[in-house]
Image (cartoon, rainbow, N blue to C red; front, side):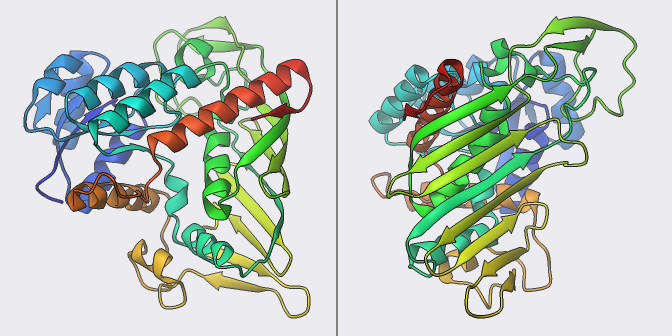
Length: 381
């Protein structure tokens, strides 16, 4: 992978995360573009990237760059992803893929036309025990799937003084908690089970219709420790929390709860999949344990150990049993799947990483959720 050169857009929370994961894989990060030249240069100097671009055209003109990672706010994803693909660059985009399904559908079309790798960073798929759950479900250990339940909850926007660009519909879209964290959960459970969501009934709520925005942006998740000298009131249209009833292909029923205002929950993604024979439960704050539920024998925990897991999970597990793997490792393994695909060179093969087509389906699902909430009824996806 050391022969592949990557450029990065965005210098916020995801910028350093992508950079670190790529370097751990041996992928060279050769350039960065921030929201202005000063940020580009500051980030490049801080993390040791050789090039700081003045604009996106300069990045695209760099012949050394073979792939681009997009970690900017959502509203920039469509234009930059499309331009990068048309310039012959592979693209790994942060989620959500675009602001609406018309944009994401166009990106799917472009990606198919240019025969390049085009991925969306749904990194939670690549926790080793999520891959193990996928293998167990798909080989039939659980039997027919009856239920898929769980949630994704955080507390970083609990107070009306908490602020980040993600709360603005103009930057991230009309959905926030669902699009920002709910799509991770929806992508994960659908990738594990192979069952698509067919219909939704959603009830969303904005706890803080007015928030205090600092005069001068703050970094993601830093508001609770940053000293903010002055603020201004700003109206908020995006949701802080919400509940969704789900119907899956094949008849399974489900529920999803999302919240960014639940005190004490820092970043908890959890799911429980109930089948005719077994159930599986996973908690992302304890990602090295998979609970296995039984009816006629004792329940158990599988602790992450490549010697005890199947071939799929073992291929994306870096450390032996007793050596925990967590959030940063999930990025590394998602990017491993992406760059292994590029190295193989067969762009007609089915990729294992989350694709633009799957990113598009998540946006279609989000639009159904938004419609369901607005009309207070079930909506077919």
